[in-house]
View (cartoon, helix red, strand yellow):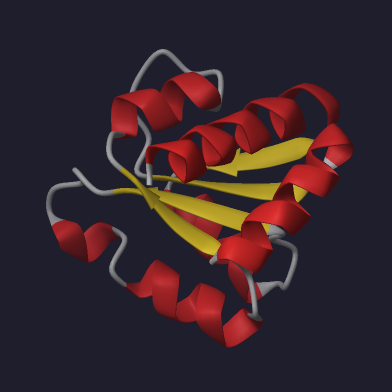
Length: 107
């Protein structure tokens, strides 16, 4: 589990630096609905859960790999923000392309 989580964070960091990401439940929902998301990560410690409950279902519907990570703080850090974020979507993979492919197989 931890290895997969690390890879998700790594993919987000790579995409942040070389591609494009979207942060926050609303932004992630928008890019999923538009079919632009390549990978989605949601934080397990989001409160209330309703904020992100629809995201895994939407991701599945769109065929996008969706991963739950333990902490919104760590997710925020990976996304390059100083506060926690409920969800992150990778929109343009950049150098994270192979990592995303690898993660999609493990899902």
